[in-house]
Amino acid sequence: MNQIFIIGDSTVTDNTPPFRGWGWALPDFVRDGVRVFNHAESGCSTRSFLAEGRFEPVEKDLSAGDLLFIQFGHNDEKDDERHTDPETTYRENLRRYCRAALEKGAQPVLLTPVSRRFFIGEGPSMLYTHGEYPRNVRIVAEEDGIPLCDLKADSRALYLSLGEEKTAELFVRLKPGENPDFPDGHDDKTHFNPFGARKICALVVREMSVFPACAAYLREDALARAEAVLKEEA
Image (cartoon, rainbow, N blue to C red; front, side):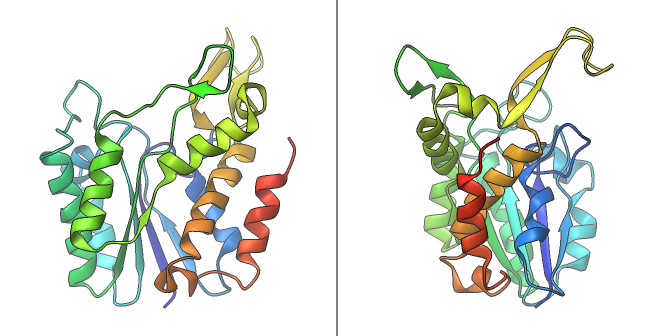
């Protein structure tokens, strides 16, 4: 019991500063001796992660007792070669990853895609993002008996509790001239800064603590740490 593997997209990957995915923060919450291998990659969908051979080293290294976290959806909905149909190929690919873990004696954990930041109107209201993909993650989890972290619902609830201004502090925002890659500035509604990545990771840790197979990997004070992170001010 010493390995956690993570596969997913840019909202999960370690990424390059000022961008961070929630997987980058997970090592702060796990027990000593637990190794976290974050194989998530920007731009990947369930389809492209397989097609590009990115799952092969993960599948090779999985062993009995390991955890495999699976979070896709942001790019599965794109209208290009990464696209999957939420009710067919998306489900099939999620099951492909889960089956590979189970065959090795590892525990797969499914996560719905984290919500984007799209507030609307005067009051605390947000657009629902990712269409039918989150629902189909839930369906696979329920039908196949796989632990589910409903990060879509959790992140949305967090954003609504914080409000539009405070939620923006979780995401990458750059002033003109602040970063040479974004000379005109940047106001991201999908990708997190380190502060935001830690908060989203705290939501994952909160969910992990519910499942004994996942909780065994966490520090004894992991849940308390997570709750403290969720209360932090920028």
